[in-house]
Image (tube, rainbow over the protein chains, first blue to last red):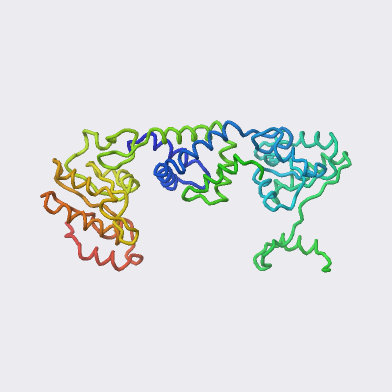
Length: 198
Length: 198
């Protein structure tokens, strides 16, 4: 291929998660053929994102303003804070429309293997935020993995003296899930946390 | 989600082939987190592509100059022209490094159903190019589909009076392919076109 500009574009697209070299080639060609409809708008959207998006200094969310729209929304309950590992987890919770409090994005999990300690994450800021004032409950919504649960335990310990209520997401059978396909850990957690049928 | 800039970026990314809404979300987040390493370079590469890439007036290839690098390369044999449906097919042939002639990109196939006639494709330009001069052989490398083969037949007819040699790609067993998994059409084509083993 002689076209170095196209080659360069393909190499960059191939770095996106979900796109390999072959699909990056397809995507590049697709973009070039749809210059006005897609290529130019996407170039502009990326430039805008690079210029405008910053990390919220309160919660760690990504937004065009700081503090972010979630932190400044007066309709949201400032007394409940949901702690998540990543902005993607926050988006997942937002899609449920079941939570109207605020968030705190850690930016990862504690990991002895990868050398990630509490100070590498957004944990000191969370402790300061809780000590600072009006928060009544902290929901630990880290992933149900070993690292996620370790991080949740660490945060629960760090918040122990503050008098704030600390809760975690419920474990159990996924909605629409079949028992036959569930792992033993989830099933025994669901059994242990069984509820009276009203 | 309150972040309309991010939302807009996700919607555009989701239009790329191979990316659905969920993977577009992942890609957007991946980009925003890698601002300097990926987001800014990709925005620039897309802007460059939008500004610079044009269609070659000779062969229909996409390049930053017109005529394109393939058409102006003095090391390539101008007497052989390989006719392909799409720029992606041309790229696939270039990756083989087995062809050192020039190309002609049709931009699709004839299709009565979709109302695509010869004048909607790059066919008149091909006929004019062949009548114009030094071309000795035209290789029809359209896809081995019904539409591709119909288009190849049409082009062969259109070039009938020009005295140029017209050839097509060989059909047969793919290299590394197992007979057991091949369709009957390919196998009988391979049988019919059998060659003496030297």
